Amino acid sequence: MKITNTTVTTPAGVVVRTDVTRTYGSGSSGSAVSATSSSQVDLSSASQQLLALQNDHNDIDANRVQAIRDAIASGQYTVDPSRITDGLIASIQELLK
Image 1 (cartoon, helix red, strand yellow):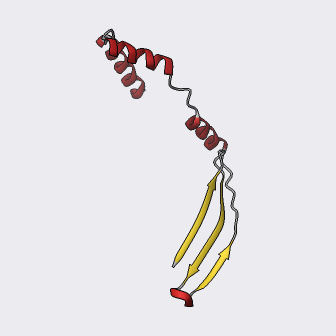
Image 2 (tube, rainbow, N blue to C red; image 1 turned 45 degrees about the vertical axis):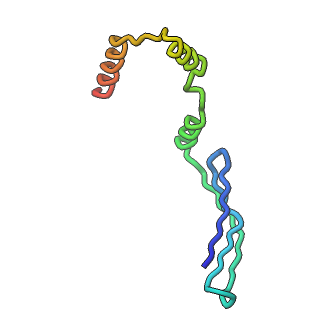
Image 3 (cartoon, rainbow, N blue to C red; image 1 turned 60 degrees about the vertical axis):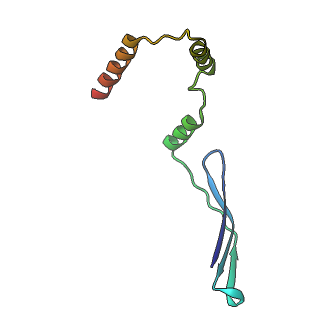
């Protein structure tokens, strides 16, 4: 038995299935069935927004990351424990709301 599927995903999240070939049976006595089909999926507006957020790479400030790396490499980076503690407490308070 042989099943071959080719699936193409567009950037908008729409999946189109094309070029489907199915072979049933064994050896040369089996029959082959070929079909070409196309399917389209429409995403809800919420799904489209989540997809856009997933593809948005602006959530990392590359310049800030490089500055921190440089400070660590040169031994000039200092950790402020009270700032970390304040951030953890604020996160916990937000979760408890």
